[in-house]
Length: 175
Image (cartoon, rainbow, N blue to C red; front, side, top):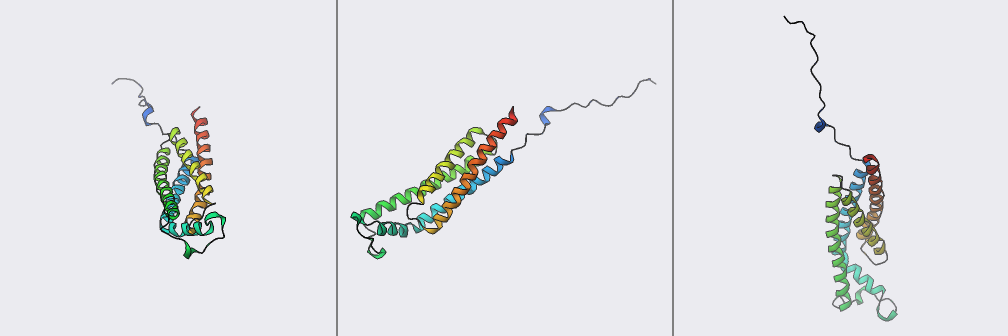
């Protein structure tokens, strides 16, 4: 028999099996706020498409031609060029809102993977969306659209602040 001391097996650390860095909580909150704002944007756009004709009639009735007194809703001609032009503007706004909301959902989901550039693009879309919603408060819109727009502003501002906070925290952790 050989006389030697039995040694414990070597314990090598596998660097590939190291724990992945955890995602900052602010990033997760920012993504959920951005996705919520995008979903509310879609609801707002659908409300604009469904109830847009009534809102256009109210807009025309309140702002009749030549600065004259407002007219009743029954007197608004829905076949006029003014009505059709406003309807085209409202529907174009609604469809572009739906498109950019879907882009925002995709970018927010990709931001969970940690892409800094994706976070910046998502933040830009959220800021532009919030600005459009603030401007939208000065035109006649359906009630559903107005309620959704106020919620979009709140969630959009929260997402913007959280995206910036998540980016700063991730940059500090990377040093």
